[in-house]
Amino acid sequence: MRTAEPRPAGLRRDTAVDAARWPDVAAPPHASRPRTAVTAAVLRRTLDRLPLRARFAGLAEAGRGGPLLEVHDPHRFHARIGTHGLIGFGESYLAGEWDAPDLVAVLTVLASHAADLIPAPLQRLRGLWAPRRPGAQLNTPRGARDNISHHYDLSNDLFALFLDDTLTYSAAVHESLPARWETLAADQRRKVDRLLDLAGVRDGTRLLEIGTGWGELAIRAAARGAHVTSLTLSGEQRDLALRRVRAAGLADRVRIELCDYREARGAHDAVVSVEMVEAVGAEFWPVYFRTLDERLVPGGRAAVQAITMPHERLLASRDTFTWIQKYIFPGGLLPSTEAVERCVRDHTGLTVARRDAFGAHYAETLRLWRERFTERAGEVAALGFDETFRRMWTFYLAYSEAGFRSGYLDVQQYLFTKEGPAR
Image (cartoon, rainbow, N blue to C red):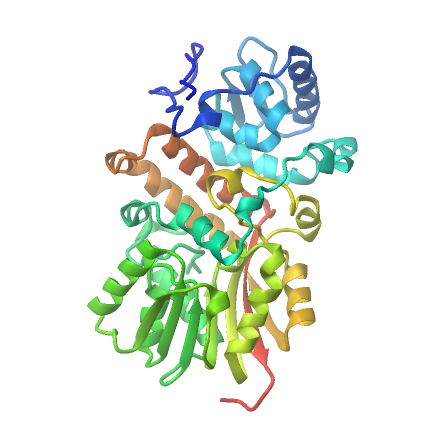
């Protein structure tokens, strides 16, 4: 077992990294001096084109001016990036080797230039140097259970610390921007109701929900008089969602199953799935969308909320192992709108009847979560999550917010319809 190495003066951490829990953060790679020097030169040329300031301890600044990225340990910073690319960039932040007074602003600049951060010659050789996704993260029925558990079974208490009272972990539709914490629960209910309206959920509707979350959508659908079957792979989520359903007095209308979407059975008037397709993996997108089709009766409707990325970035990175996959969502991959619509066209009998984008709203939802998480860092620590975890979660929320603020990411609400007589 490796032990945490002593940290050079100036690193912004309060405690050493637990090497047993975070081996690749505790021990930076042993990159050769020439490789580190080449990485530093390439990185400086890249930074000099960007509207930010990169300040390196003991070295000259880089960048054209803007939000500050402060590198406390340039050698380790360059060694990690030169060896592990963007995974190394994130791990360097977890190690406290760099920081930023406004982390979202720095990451927004980088996300805005995602297509050209890596020089064109290296982009063309991506297949040779970029790490490949581990086979263990493939979303087979067994792999999907492990991948979902990695994130969603962390602790219900952890999620409750930064989510609103609805425990809704997806983009809200805000009444106004910028959003306010005081209205987040109402904004989340507005989003849920909008999806239920799209799917035509009403009294008597037989609704299939793929991805339960903590039960808010199932509860609101049942309150309309629907009969809900909801599927999840997270035992922690299922337990709490069932308690919330019982507390709402709706246990006779909601069934929550610990079940893979591929195991879904029965005929349903409507299907709703909120930010679930991102956990499916490109290999299984056809199966996922066929499931929507096969479970719907003729004339049925499916409402799907999905985070999307540009199609050209999907093509460039779909086989690459990323920081998000390593630390946050193993097996995850964001589709593009082109990939979604092509998959629906080629593998189902569904029709894309409507698509609404609201990425600016997700940026605000993430800001509220991030601020809440920061405010309650002491309570997160009391749950047993160490400083490295807290830096990881902060980076994840800021990284995601930056993606939406830059326009690199978007979020869509889709309506798919199935031919047949109207219900």
